[in-house]
Length: 157
Image 1 (cartoon, one colour):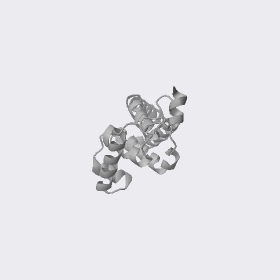
Image 2: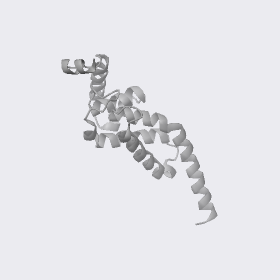
Image 3: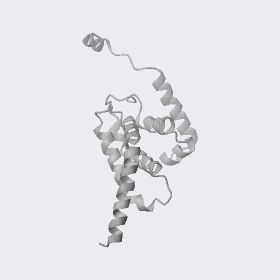
Image 4: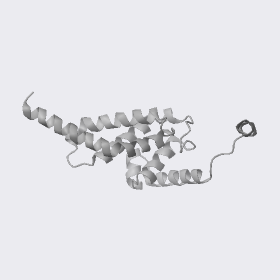
């Protein structure tokens, strides 16, 4: 390997490390919301983010002016959507009451601030459907947590 190639690889690695240092905490939080895991106990979210970051690193030289955060978020959302069936079980996270699709739309729209049109294009749904799902998800979250059955209430006391 030539000295020039070595220098380019080091530069690429430094750029990517700087990107990850700045973006990873927010992306991990988004992944944790998607997987409905509690913060600090989120192995599925960590795996999802690691795979998305690996994809971004593989494409790093081809980004050419694209926002790496946006690219990684798209990859994260796409990976979550492809494997949404894995995230139906309740795990104790903030958005556990929502379906995986509702979580994906809510996180993209409200946490990440992605426009309805971009969200719809990213997940392959009409804009009106994205709007309806987001509205339903927000309504579900505003209604408060479900009440515990009497047996659980006694055990908790």
